[in-house]
Image (cartoon, one colour):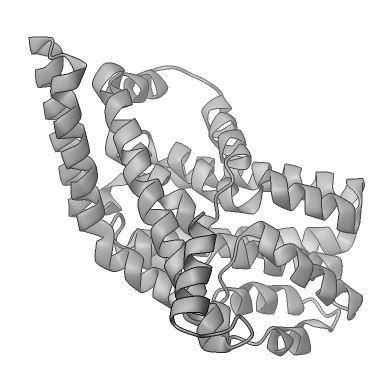
Length: 322
């Protein structure tokens, strides 16, 4: 329905066509803007309801006081794998986790895996590259989330969260404590939950719009053939270049699989192509712009730097075993 509205607005009302750079960019912008704001509002309301009746601080305290031997990272990574979100669409749920005080390493495990693995991309990968490559890709995506979440969780990065998200964390805890102490019924809590959801949307509005605008420009104007030119060599340095060149691109995993198929057909090694795919779906300028409302630039740099290293190592490993 959202896609139909974007198509109607851009192609029928504005009179543009999908074959033009401007038409593709505007269609992408309107579709992703509506989708992400609806997701953000819906998830914020759901997380508000959950936090009201099952305070997230209890889960946070449980995770902090019990030895789960890394199981929490695996569960978060698997949850990321089964949610059909791209990197920017994953951020609303990530904000909900951070707002509730879920340990940052666990939330990163989700944020890493969610854009890398989803059922549509897996089905396309299976049909294009076969079961062996698909299994390796899926397992590596989950493993990257587990390892990345664990490593980032051990770095004590919560101090680099933005003042805005720390404020809504504190307000949420105070509000929930008051509701519990006074046994406030659901219907009286709902207006405050909806108000908080709108507050989150207002807080990230500018960042989301800028991020999606950047994504739209990259989607409509960056020529795919430009990347193929620099990735066709089998030298070791093509993997780092693939990951770096992927950052300006922005798409979900399902949208990148056909591009990867073309890359491989034109001589790009499969590991290099997969590293490029990971960079496109896991690292992007729009994602960094949206995360700026939740994280300081230092934390974004640490997060992106860690993922860049992991994606490069994965590309080298894929080129070796595939």
